[in-house]
Amino acid sequence: MGSIKNILWVAFISMVPIIELRGAIPVGAALELPWYTNMAVSVIGNFIPVPFILLFIRAILDWMRGCPIKLFRKIADWLFRKAEKHASKVERYAFGGLLILVAIPLPGTGAWTGALVAALFRVKPRIAVPAILLGVISAGIIVTLISYGVLSFLGFLL
Image 1 (cartoon, rainbow, N blue to C red):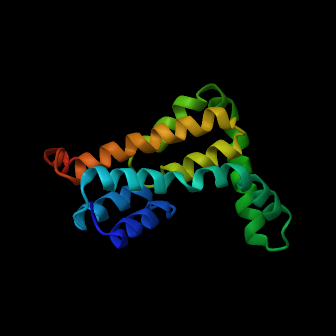
Image 2: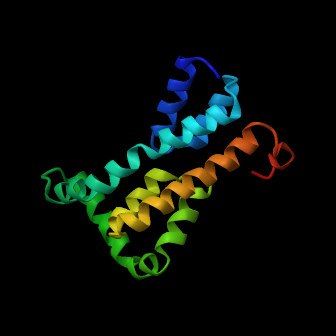
């Protein structure tokens, strides 16, 4: 099963933006957690921030747009401009696009990015939540297979 300390460590790492489960699963493998415990904890941990991002990020970005700190305004304005530019594409491919964005285990993709994109494009939670969850599970399967050697012969390609 693995020690509680190691499980909590993996859960925490999987919640960190950018690192997410792509970093947590290899850490869990190095800590010799069983693959099924590692993957389950990483998927759950990676998904925990998603509802909060979906609920609160627009309000935070709106606040940033009106903030006297110029850097905050610039970041928020840039994100909103990007969202407006690609709104029609996201509306057309919302579920599949989010799923693929989250499932691809590369830097700059993942649950945090998927939730941010969904919030910026106002994707309905009934579409965004299952797409992001399936993407997180898919990424978890891919990274688990790689981390535990099932796909080690492909490791040089990734």
